[in-house]
Length: 138
Length: 138
Image: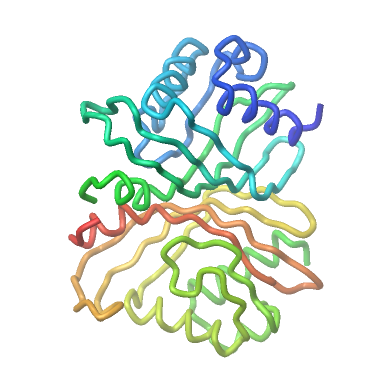
């Protein structure tokens, strides 16, 4: 599997389907979030259980969360993807009640790959659009 | 010059030094902004004079604007870079008076390259950090 196939399958199975068991298959035992402004785990290295926690937390607030990949730049050990995230905030998040808002926002992520696993990422999300669509103050 | 060298030199000469003459050397005659949420030229194709206008507009508001590249993913026709932008808002921007704020925010850009020129980009900037650091409402 090329790094591009790995990342596309990881996005489909882990993030779009929320398949917790697939984490063992695609995510390295140590997963480093090199940079992800606003993410509660920014700068941390996660084991697989903590990765599942992060996945569950995100998908609990937006149960229909999905990422559509719009473009990719691929090298053997890094894959950058530009995506649009769509989801409906139907459950509380970060101590805030559910807003019922439909969110559609863009982001770009660089995924790091090694030996058939995703080992971490560096990401920027258009959070200003997210807070505006959710009716929250910037 | 590889696509990576092209993009790194373009960032240094055009964006960090603000060299208007260098636009002819590095920027294609038609430059397409495929996606750049919040950018006034999002979705447009710019000729070189319009590109210079965009460069001048950005650097007028932040005369010390600079981008530090933290990582890159390179393929022959696409280069993704993760960067940190730093600058001080010492002149009016978008109808707002200068705030004097020092801004430091992260972004990721995919640059498209063809025949030795940069032909466009797709970008996400952590605008929420920018508006917060400038004391503006989200």
